[in-house]
Image 1 (spheres, rainbow, N blue to C red):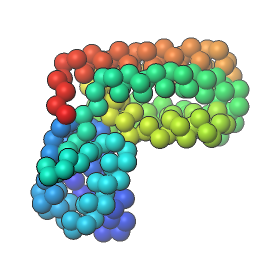
Image 2 (tube, rainbow, N blue to C red):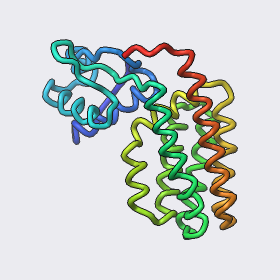
Image 3 (cartoon, one colour):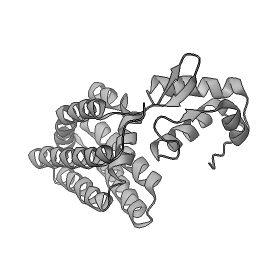
Length: 222
């Protein structure tokens, strides 16, 4: 495992490195996280590592089992279904609001995220796809102008990123996802709220189906 961090901001960088390893599947669901191994790999102290793991626990990416240690959480389908349900209730409405409320600068941020996603797809960069997709939604939420709804979904960000990693592991899913995100972007550009709502709903339906397909092939381990 190739995880590297700088000396400044130790905890935040450890959190970021471990989060990315979990999201991309380098650290696998149910895997026990051996403190000595991680400290050696990252070049950090055990207190710094433990602080980072406690933070990841709040994001529900890891969990502690008494007398056994810390493990990568396994996001099961029922939890995933509830996350997709929450997104389906909120994101199409936010997309519609973004189509009405967005500024030119906000539209430019959405377009840039789509371009970054396209480049990541072309480069088969899985982490780049996940992070640019995250940036797309952050820009969309900002354009929608409802901070509270955005905060609700941002609270699910880490687990949503895990699900994105799973859905994008399905062959051809990334290309479909690119077209779906661009459809949302174009509807927002054209200030067409109903089209934006429908495009966001369609994207979520397809993403959920792809994630379920992958999860059915992967037995739960924790």
